[in-house]
Image 1 (cartoon, rainbow, N blue to C red):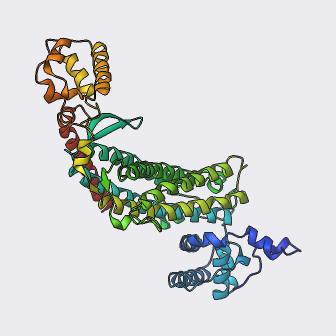
Image 2: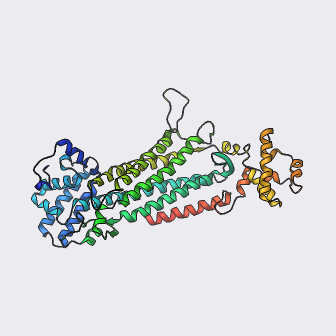
Length: 466
């Protein structure tokens, strides 16, 4: 492969090898090889269509690029640091294959709009895969929620028992988080789906190019209207990293809770052996390593977002070499995200729910205190007064090791003669949950409604995808 600098005409001194290695990006941007070839094919076809290049030259370049693409897919291409990046490597390979006519490929184009085009295509091509993996998890959550509508567990605030809830309701909260994640990535597609090709270095070109032609060839839905913006914009990558960070934060929250729920102290859940590991010294251990790894990898993704924001914050228009730093973090985020989503789905789809343990945790925890306060309020006692009464009963119960449901009817009627024996039914955890059917509440009917809406949303998504 040729290794002389394709931009080296005005240079007299040659950089040391270690300087070339520092400046080169081929070690990572070769991941965009397919996108680079696709972009070049669209560009040369446009040069032919507009007669900027004659048919013979164009056809030679097209045939050469298509052959290189086949070799790429067959794993036969080899890239060099001397050729710096994926663009120069592909052009050098093309030059070796078809001769000097390959140099005409770059007519009306710069590496600035070329790399921006490649990067847009890279992100655009991977967003649907990420969205698909998220929606697979959503389906798993809905199925698990449907099986656990009437599974009662403690609901927490401040990690203290608050009120009993449906485990299905809990799961649907994470479904809702993931729904917003999908919407964010879908909006991200709008900004990834813009073509920078034809902006050239920063000012456009004097050649009569057809940017609509190349945008259509590459499947872009829109075109940058400003050439300075086209080559310097990385908002679509920042959006991707931001969306990925929020997604990983959501996964991390559930992984944190899974790690607690599978402990001896809680024992609400049990993970499959397929998604746990043992200890090298303690034979009894069953560690939630996959949940912990996903939780840990969230920091990695957050770091990539902060890294690119820091790179972008002081860049003057238009292109600067700093922008080479936009890719590694994005590539690594894709590499982190896709397997994390797959492992996460496998982990929760094989989870065992200890329903009795969850239910038992709501029986001796005073999480039915609000039910009693609401009950007193329905009997005409102002809620603030009822709140104080129940608070005193809780304190007394804690001192005497007595739950609210263990207080005698006589004692209750000393508080108010309006209290009747139906109070004990109200204090049952399952009744407390079942009755909370306000819109979005944890009541069984409400949770079933949430699940039905979610199924309709996922069904509609499947129709769109098909």
